[in-house]
Length: 133
Image 1 (spheres, helix red, strand yellow):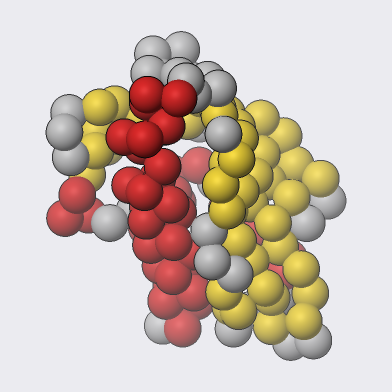
Image 2 (image 1 turned 45 degrees about the vertical axis):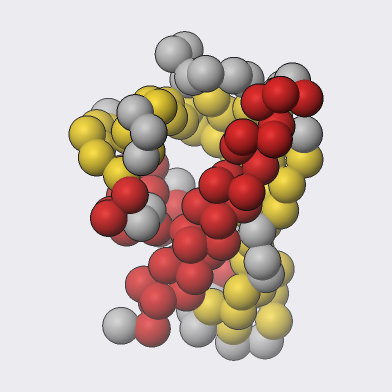
């Protein structure tokens, strides 16, 4: 299953945003706090529980310059997936979005497609808000 968040324009340069996102503990600032709990982070991974009790573990999985930031599902994820944060220069601003590629069966897809899309959209908007402060 492939999903993408809405594209947002962030009022910061790409290098500044990439430096922020390279620290996995900063993912916390992007999450919808009213819908997540049990946040945990170490140097290269984090996890949190979403409404409904599912734990989402994320592990840093590399970078491509300041353009792409890769995360993958951790050991105890309900299914394997990969997240990619895309960052594109737009003058003094940066366009960004999140893409998701997961190994999800048809039944599970019906249950998770909308909540995941909403989560990624909120994370993109929260990234934008973080740099507007």
